[in-house]
Image (tube, rainbow, N blue to C red; front, side, top):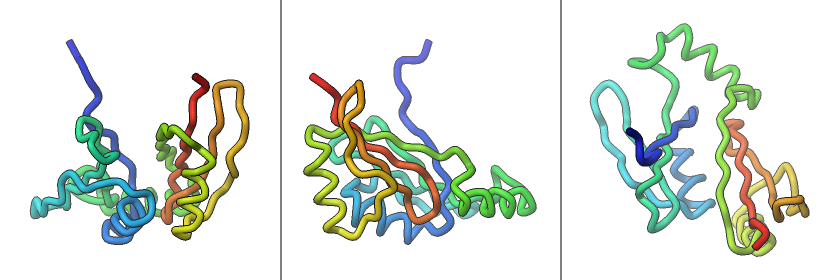
Length: 136
């Protein structure tokens, strides 16, 4: 049976802008950037962790009709598509300061939780992102 989750997917409106944000600001690395003709296969991951990749997919064919893609794009800008990523970090406050200094805008500053400390932001397209420093 299954032994790993290797890829997850979130929708983005502009893959070049997504690269600027996920690689340039968040510090992820590109695993694949392939023009497949019918779509651009663009994945990123935490540096040194290529076993779990995130596909930054532009809504459209072949997986969606143009009509449905337009609806998804509208929902995406409202933060209503359910795209969500959660990263772990050894130091939530330091990561917050680093990302803030890179111009990342937050929806929630580092906050103590029963499970640790976490913070929240949205990418330029409306996807929710959290990063967590778990209690040891």
